[in-house]
View 1 (tube, rainbow, N blue to C red):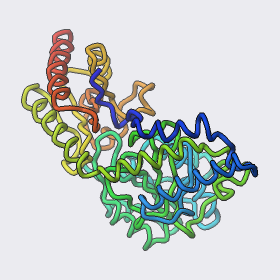
View 2 (view 1 turned 120 degrees about the vertical axis):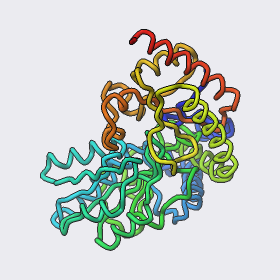
View 3 (view 1 turned 90 degrees about the vertical axis):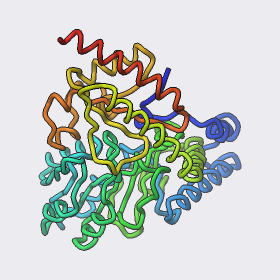
View 4 (view 1 turned 180 degrees about the vertical axis):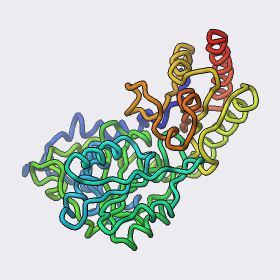
Length: 377
């Protein structure tokens, strides 16, 4: 299989698995326990938190472990809004956010909160001036992601963070797609979420960066884990794996980004030049892995299915929305017509992909597009 869906999930690095295995088979004590087995895993958990914090450029007590990016986004939005209830009732959320933020914002509407969804420009960029325009005196929360998960377009988070600071608005920056790829934006936001399976770490684990002094209430009540802000037995093996994976990603960031971008650019160049009726969605300032392309006369679902049958794994958008056959809310927000939106396929490359795989994928893609168009003709 040629795997071109790395924005959905990445394979587990071998050294990450090795590091985790120790805490799955040998050192399995509950870190909240008082005995020696618990103390050993408590130290491992502490070390993992320290390592992730150092890589993120923040202090260890600003890192909270979660089950992933979805939980981090839910916690940030709901926890920050509830902590400031009575001070305001308005949220500003970009219209291209991950469903974790979009749906969380819609949840808050049911409880009397008001939300302004800010649209991107035609290149998929959320303009800082539009964020500023959406702010009100009662705005307490803003969410604009670091880079979009469907198009890979990188957002002007420094400017947006500055606007939020000026207006005393809690700013959450979804960094699920950028952790280990771009420098972590701890200096410009109140909170940010990461998910380890996006950078060759374990599934079902992530972290919330929460800047000291930022108001938030807990989402999961229980024990005193995560300094009393998130109950539940700590996942030591995944914390250790996440730390190793993030360290690898940051250490090899420039090399990996250059290799991935070279393969991606060659792939895109061939697709756009060799297949008529193709359109690259989103501006040029994007993550090195992403290519979102629409194909006239096709549907993204049919094309992804046919490519899968030919041994190429791709997606039509966010993995969290793949089960629902609906038009991409991201491409729709960018103003594209329905046919272009529904014919889009997301190709995302990773460090284990090769130029030969990309060339093979182009040939199989050409065949699949021709097959679909011949049936529809």
